Length: 132
Image (tube, rainbow, N blue to C red; front, side):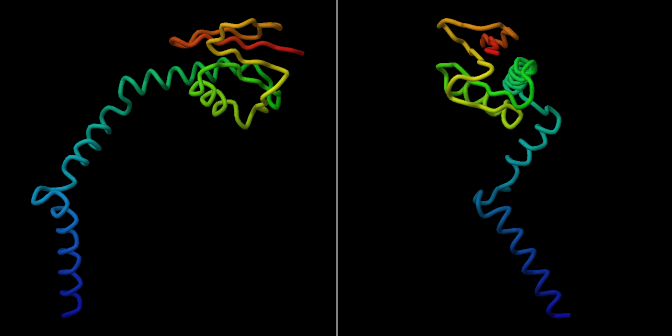
């Protein structure tokens, strides 16, 4: 009986320390829990929604490329290059040289080949070109 009371007291003391010690008397989890509860009601913030729709548009631009095709992503923006790499992998074979398809993202240079898909996602211009 004494062990059960001692174990219960240790658990109570541990939870009290976790809740109050980091915030010096206030409930430490109160700000975190209110953020969590607010996120339950608004699943995505407006900035997150616009980024998700932009990523969906990127995926749509790659939809015309058959599975396993080699793709070369041409852009000067490393963020956009990474996003297209993330979306295309593993369905597409990403290469750094001549490929079956080239994806031009905000590209100012010359575009050669047959245009397969052309979209504008928010502020990003995308051209998918076939070199078959």
